[in-house]
Image 1 (cartoon, rainbow, N blue to C red):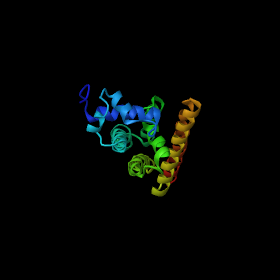
Image 2: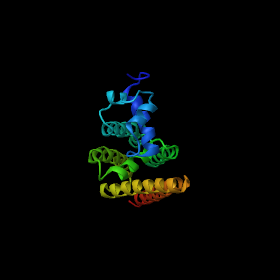
Image 3: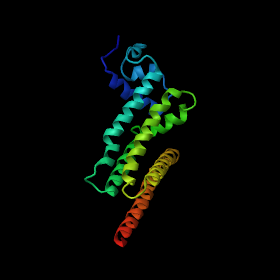
Image 4: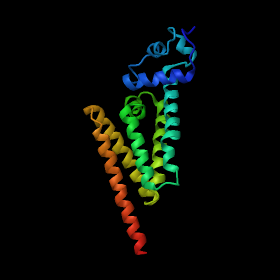
Length: 198
């Protein structure tokens, strides 16, 4: 029996914190249970395995980002530039505060070859992110170019997040975000010039 009553979402939240700080392989179910205030072994009443719990964490993160971050891209009442800027700023804040975005990249790196069950969940997150960026970039680029720039943006952000962690310097993320915005601003100006010439 648990020391205190918790729900599955609380278990997922505590697991997220531990997976983020310790990684998947170094985190034990006993540690997650203790963080939730559960007696030893009680965590298995909520999740049958660490793999099942990790999948719940990945899906929790995906839904959080879909609703709170990626949805920004689809607000057609705002300019493409303002949506890209807010999407970048919001993502950057989450990365800097360590609330889970890096976890997707970290878990992918740690488990991609050893826990294949995680792959579709991680891929779905990056597909959602790509789709959001493609939606913005389609305002100025062909579908093929929009996909290229969306993937380039994600690579720049993920690389900057890694450098931020290595050097403990959030300026890597800020500079990557600025570079992305400047590139898009340049494309916006070019599109306006082309419209005026027609």
